[in-house]
Figure (cartoon, protein in one colour):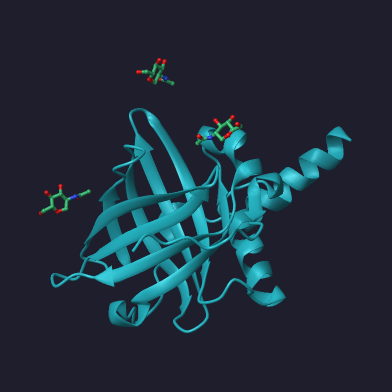
Amino acid sequence: MASLRTLLGVVLCSLMVSSSEILPQADFDLQAMAGKWYRTGICSDGQWFVSRKANMKTGTAIITPTEDGGLELSFFSLINDTCQKMENLANKTEVPGKFTYKSRHWGYVSEMLMVDVKYDEYALTYSFNTRGNETFVINRLFGRSLDLSDEVQEKFRQFCLQTGILPEYTVLLPKSVECTLA
Ligand SMILES: *[C@@H]1O[C@H](CO)[C@@H](O)[C@H](O)[C@H]1NC(C)=O
Ligand SMILES: *[C@@H]1O[C@H](CO)[C@@H](O)[C@H](O)[C@H]1NC(C)=O
Ligand SMILES: *[C@@H]1O[C@H](CO)[C@@H](O)[C@H](O)[C@H]1NC(C)=O
């Protein structure tokens, strides 16, 4: 068992990419990202995720490009039958497809990359987050619909592995009733 684990560790490490190797989607088109998305998957190596992952469900994200090349991110999710809204304003960086924001709700500073986007189908994002002396990765899978192909879901699982997140911390979220406050 120990040797299997070592072997698995070696395999995982050889597949892993460091955050500096992760690049945004080539020719990133911010306007094409606009509109409504569903968050359908999430994975994280953060401590916060351990107790929360079992209760997370799909949610709705509205992306609105700002005039200066950043984006407004509104996220809606149903928590204990209450529709909760979280809003963040992300600044653009010198790298197209890379943004930075401070989470108003959680207080972490996030560097977010649009890694793999098919604008009418799915968007896979990577974020590297810092809060105090704690750093953690969150990858998210967004879809234009709640039902993404097996191929896209597999792409997400593989990306989580490559960024060092264990399979038990990779969640394709159960569907929730949609909520958006007017
Ligand atoms: C939701 O309800 C559960 C069970 O009543 C409770 O333990 C949990 O803290 C609640 N979550 C939030 C975010 O209010
Ligand atoms: C985003 O830009 C605003 C205005 O320039 C600035 O005040 C804020 O600190 C920036 N946020 C981040 C996380 O860099
Ligand atoms: C991180 O910060 C917290 C609170 O400030 C502190 O209790 C903890 O020891 C620090 N951890 C490390 C690894 O420095």
